[in-house]
Image (cartoon, rainbow, N blue to C red; front, side, top):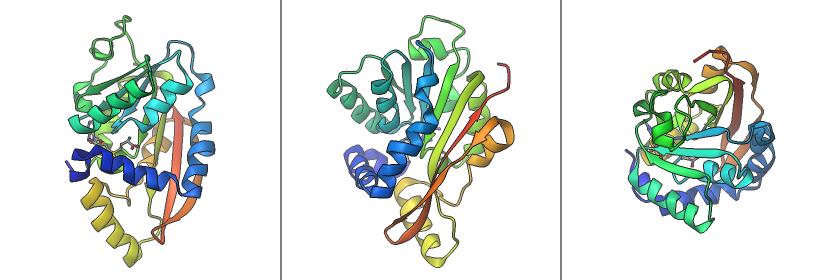
Length: 227
Ligand SMILES: C[S@@+](CC[C@H](N)C(=O)[O-])C[C@H]1O[C@@H](n2cnc3c(N)ncnc32)[C@H](O)[C@@H]1O
């Protein structure tokens, strides 16, 4: 695991700094939340914030939709500790943070792990923000999560991608993304959704951060597989 996840306050400080960039902020406030389509979730829906880190996305969803259940899942104790601190600070009652490797969450144990009464529960929405670039085996992870999403449930992947293979982006990918965040920003995780889901949408935005061109994207698709 990359060092930065052991220092969640530092992680949040770096992320906050990025989020304060005007293009980033605009992307989050407008494009990203628009794509989540939170108004379409039914009361009691179950949402998974996969590789939730300190809970940035899951906490916002829980706050915006107090009538849905949100589960943040991550393998790192330290980021989850920080996430739970925010739950307390924001006085949220509809979100839980669970320490688990995603492979340990199965359709058989969702209710138990998430504290839900319905023992046939599956997720209505899975969101993965900056998670797939940080997982080496992201294709296998994606395949596994398909068994956790109900038919017609939606899947959202949000991340940063380096569109150019210049010397600068190669160095940034190696020295910042990989070393600091364990991430590879030359990956294209959205292709997983594009190939397998219907109603695929992917608005993107370009932002210059540290004078490097980044592509911020959010991809959304609807699951057609019966589980
Ligand atoms: C870059 S952080 C993203 C955090 C958060 N989603 C955000 O947008 O700020 C990537 C996270 O993936 C988690 N992670 C990596 N592999 C995982 C796995 N197999 N199961 C669950 N979480 C995992 C790491 O612990 C880390 O917190």
